[in-house]
Image (cartoon, rainbow, N blue to C red; front, side, top):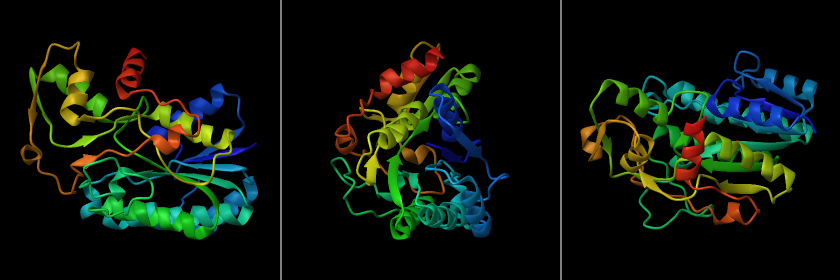
Length: 277
C-alpha cells in the first residue's frame, strides 16, 4: 500500500513520517509548499498522479486565537475548504482518508464524556471550521476515518510540554489554569492509532482518540515538571484571558476506539515515555 501524508512539517505529520519509516511503509509526504490543499486543481492533479491507497491528513491551521480575527480567513480556507478539496479528490481516486479533527467541535458543557454520536456545538472559529471539514469529509462520500483528538503534544513542534519546560527554566513559580478538563494526547499514540484503523480495516466513521485518563492543564503541568525545581500553582481561566473560547470540560469517550483492539496508554505513561526521549 502507498500512503500520502499531508501536512508533512507539522507536529503530527513529522510523527507519521517517522512511524511509517520505522515500519518500512511506502509513503510520500507533502507540506503546503509542495501541495496546497486550498488549491483544488492542484490537489486533484497531485492525487491523481501519486494515486495513493491511503491519505493521512495532518494538515491544519491551528492558531486558535488568531482564528477569531486576523487568521479567520485562512482558518476557514485551510480547515474547511482545504479539507473539502482533499476529501473530494480522495473520493475520486477511491482511496481511504484519515482526517484529524478536534474536541473543539463540542461546547464543553457536558458533565460526562462526549460520544462520537453526540450533537456538536463548536464555540470558536477553529472548532466551527474543523466541524465544516468533518462535514465535507462525510459529504464527499470518501471511505474515511475522522479522528477527533485533543491537547496534542509531541517531539516535533511547539506544544504545552515544551512551553512549560521553557518557562520552568526562567521562572521560579508558574501559574496554570485549573478549571479546564481534558485528555492529553501524545502524537505517537495518535499516529499509531491512525495506522491501526487502516491495518485492522475498522468500520469507517468518527473516532475519538486521546491518551487515557484526564487532567486539568494545572495537573498536566505538575506532572511535566514534577522533577523540576519550580512551584506550580492553580488559577482560573480568568487569569489568562484569551480571544477564543476554550471548552471547560473536554473529555471525549475512548470506548469506541478501544473496541477496535487498540491499546490506549494513559497520558501519564505516554508523557513519561516522551520525556525519556
